[in-house]
Image (tube, rainbow, N blue to C red):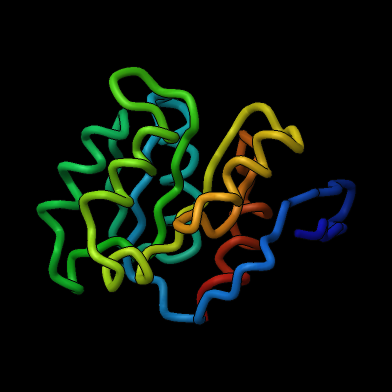
Length: 157
């Protein structure tokens, strides 16, 4: 893992970028999983600002997200990007990852970029997230338009 520093006007952004290779693909749909309505609203806004034609779904916890993904098993309805909060009621991000690993096949898992979103940007949290084979990267809350664009440019063509 390495840190990439970006400068945009007066804003400095630090985003943890993984060493894990991920093939570039076209972004078609996004699944936002966070219990905070404001975070979901802002992240949806950033996605739609990037491309108003993208499909954006929001879920309030990991259980809802697992159920949604289970009903989205064809490639056209499957999200390309999943932005996952770590701390949520009902099922948190960590339990979601365990269930995701057990429930879905490798083909499905390889076609979803999972970014763990956390309020606590510590080395421990980043290391724990990146130790999961299904996690592609991490980002600290709140996402900004710039942070979101960096993530999209990193993983999608």
